[in-house]
Length: 231
Image 1 (cartoon, rainbow, N blue to C red):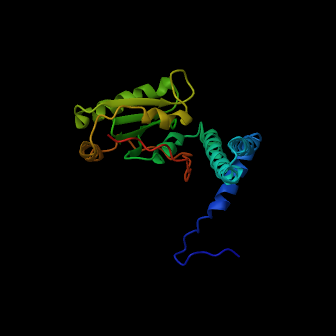
Image 2: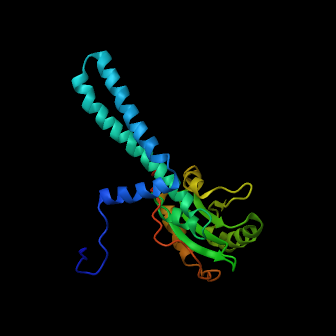
Image 3: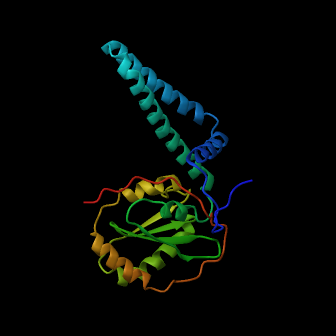
């Protein structure tokens, strides 16, 4: 019988259990993924051992190879797991929001600041680049939403750059898997203090509309992206 904490909350699974759960999802999404992980780890171990044989310090390079192989295996495992999770949520309303909310760094994400009955929506992200409006939906429908939201916040944003990013499968749109990397590449135009002031001004704005309830993936735990370099 599983134990439940006194406060009634669900106990989080341990690290090994989490890895097993992710491995099961990964195996279902791509049967070749786990063999690739194993091959990368074993290949790294063999390379390090060969170096040890050449140098004549096998006693040192064997444990080093084990550590290096385990590290490489975990890195490859994490990358493949990330791709599998992106594949699972791609196309679902709110998929971009799930990715945005799990980004590392000083980002403030406001979900569904505007949308329509088709569950096309626009999310607002505030960070060092400025304001980023991220849309979900077909290109022929989200353009109007982005334009209206950009016009609505332009006075509060003042001279701060406003970017718009379309997530979807149409031409000139980016996929859910490309979203984090795309935002990380944007220039850092603001200081931390300016980001705070901007966020306060935008949070004071009323929402343009209430989004209809839809199948937004709740509890979608996306892999953490790389932490942006602050200057």
